[in-house]
Image (cartoon, rainbow, N blue to C red; front, side):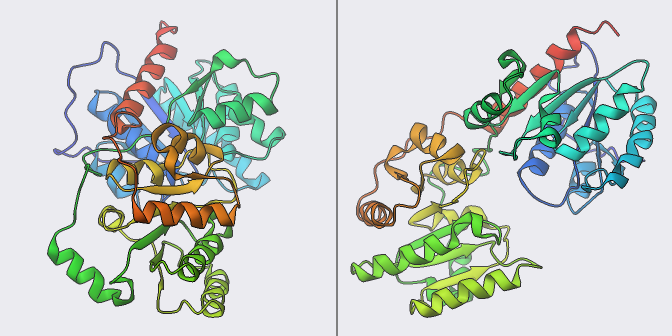
Length: 387
């Protein structure tokens, strides 16, 4: 077990009436929405004076977790294999040694491990789960609905799990949307001249026309093909634009990247499309984008990129389904188009590039709201336990 308490850890606003030990279970800490949420809640726990521990196989985010005052236990509890069940005893020993008050599982295999570990304990920690995705319904996924409280990251997720698991009591499901930090995505932000000069020096083909940005990892579910076809359709209508497929280049996804390059070549768009690996300057890229695209052909559970872009006052164009459709309906209805409707997509893109409706300053889906609601849920559950 590793622990590191830094002098720079966030200071608690006030000492809590009861210090809780909260253990989050997650497969690894490399990247992704569930991983980011785990760090955000860990940070909030430390700031509130509680003890925060994460159990995972490790990853590049562990250093940040430790620097922000949490602890980390390295155990591979995420591999989808019967062999992973051999970790049940190790997790039980960890929970006993920590005298854990709450175990919060964020993925299916860690949830199975955590639930089985708790079964064998005399003093059982409270068990909470967060459903981060629209998992295929079935017995394996059902473990995510076995928490004393089940956090759904959107109304879309809540409706999905209640629709597929009729035995699930609605009162146990609490919607706590993921949130973003408005200070990290400030309204009206514009990157400085030095950044813009360096960016367009690196990608000169993106200069000189409105930029469309589709952020998303290298999987066909994210709608990269639709984005390329959209650019071709805009060109055919005489609308000049450029396209950035941000984050599509990933190790192990080379064949998919080549498939996209072939589509770009077949449409004669080599001079208008750029593909990149994930980047850390996503805020500045959004800020110079005329449109941020969210074209996933499979419903998303939430759609954080929608909120990030709108927080910066940048228009978003996306398919009206899943969490993305839910967010657009509430925050930016002008950006919604029916799933897979190519004609509507190009029409709406042309309209938004010509005159985009005003975007109000974000008043919801803030990180602090998500952190506060989650900590209140922890305290609510633990409040029923006199220990």
